Length: 140
Image: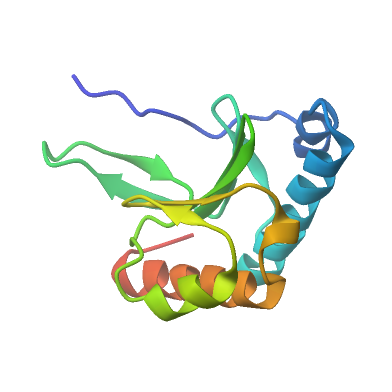
């Protein structure tokens, strides 16, 4: 039986961010939290061991099993930030070119540090993903 990869926890987001080694990464995490709170209107929640998510929707696996997943989210990986876009980046090529230094995979936007990107473009990109998620799924 397929089990959810991550679930929301009652961990303190502020406490989680304060445990990050480098002050610059803490500041980046706080800025992303503020940006995603502003875009979503939701408070941040730590999902699993370290995904910071905003809102939720029912994710359905090809087997038909469903579970809750954040509408928009990010994580701090060693040496980079990961912004998750469950709708993908197919229609966001122009924004990605304007964003600054980044790499993408199917649902992940990798940024080394927020000083490498244009924050207005990042906010626009996150807003687009958030709206696409609401158009495609029933989100909370």
